[in-house]
Image 1: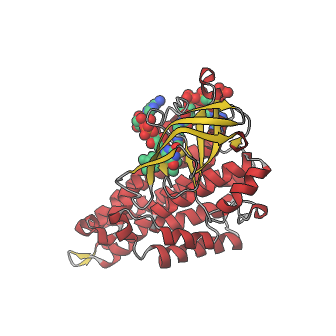
Image 2 (image 1 turned 30 degrees about the vertical axis):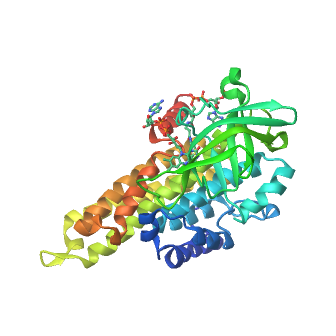
Image 3 (image 1 turned 90 degrees about the horizontal axis):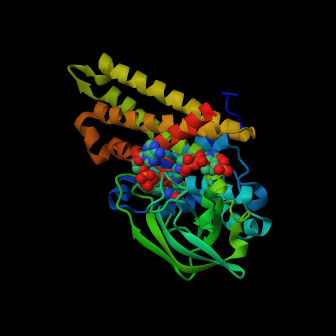
Length: 379
Ligand code: CAA
Ligand code: FAD
């Protein structure tokens, strides 16, 4: 693995950094307090090509590698983790899943518009009684003629109201367990589709998280991705890559908080010197920087393995497990270094601390990542 970034990769990182500073930073506190979706900012991110970064240019994507993607995710997440999750879901769950497993007409109809960010996508696996235990799908899809009739509820769906296209997992044959799950492309204006209330969250408050209800919703057979029964494999394979995106989000949250704490420590004076001159603070900064660098190496390794066409399931689970732990620990220390100022919104670190928590929960909790890792170890 080459640790020296290419000129293209550096250019992507710099563009994302510049965008985050100039376009995401202003208003980020207000969007968090009022739980406002970053609509204008996402539109600009789309124009800059951040919504379909890895999609082949044939389908109007950026044709970039996964390393470029995680570099951009880190920079965006340093400033606005809500915008970052919108970007992550669209890139690594929806676009990737469609490009890898969709057929030509599905790609032509949906992928191109998703890759340019003209429309947003959502990935709908979780249900009220099927979160970690994702094989326990209750949503059903019954084949009637040339369409499936979907009934059920999805929970916690990111881009729940802002998306136009939803990848929905549903049980087509309940007697087959996870082998009887299929994935469907669902358009928002389909009769029988209802968006539930918006969740009022601890963190990533700018992202819109909703439940979705399907009542006798007819979906054409042409909207099924792959064969009937392929849906659980589809979800797992797609999440293997999605977890790299969330690991990069966690890394960005940690590095954003660390950079703020480092700068603050050099300004704030106590006992006649800057707090950065007290060894207790220096050691905190040393630990934070070391943890962040270790997390970055795991994230880059997972992205690199994906780019090399090698198996990355294990590496992405490790990257997400560790980077999300680092995000929690580093943000807590960043608040501590800021003292009382860290506890108020103006200094950003309290938001980053709240945002960090979700990275240990979604796209598989830390406990689930340990299950994935240990099963790989013991196989
Ligand atoms: N790739 C391909 N197939 C896989 C796989 C992978 N990475 N992981 C599992 N499978 C296959 C298994 O091989 C098995 O198939 P066979 O029976 O044919 O061998 C099948 O899937 C079931 O696997 P398990 O027997 O291991 O099932 P399990 O129930 O014991 O555990 C699990 C599965 C790993 C815990 C899985 O349910 C899981 O990942 N749960 C977490 C769900 C999750 O991550 N949800 C995220 C929702 S999206 C989201 O959160 C987005 C967001 O916030 C922004
Ligand atoms: P549970 O599965 O009920 O877990 C509860 C606790 O038990 C956790 O600590 C868990 O780790 C632990 N646990 C469960 N099983 C085991 C086990 N076998 N061994 C050890 N511990 C275990 N889902 C989507 O499909 N699409 C989305 O876009 C999406 N976005 C989300 C956005 C937000 C803001 C949130 C909060 C969630 C989102 N999710 C989404 C759902 C998310 O993936 C689930 O919340 C997550 O997978 C955990 O499921 P659960 O909430 O049902 O918790």
